[in-house]
Length: 78
Image: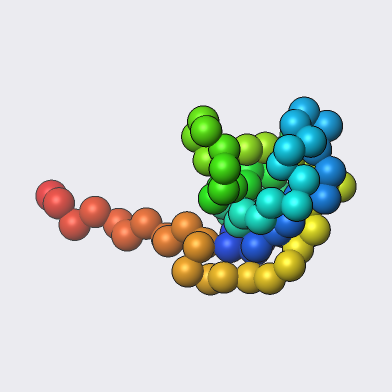
């Protein structure tokens, strides 16, 4: 499946066909329970530039570790 930071291309979209061919990156750190992967960084989207897509609508085209969410450090405040 996909990992956080994977660069994906949208091959089909049931909700908006204008997104076909656009690229973004996966921000989910674990496989989603409902089958919808969160993709961020979609160019040309006027609303929030992220969307939810099912696995059959996406194709992996690369991996960029810098796009993966950083692990949170434990707070040292006490």
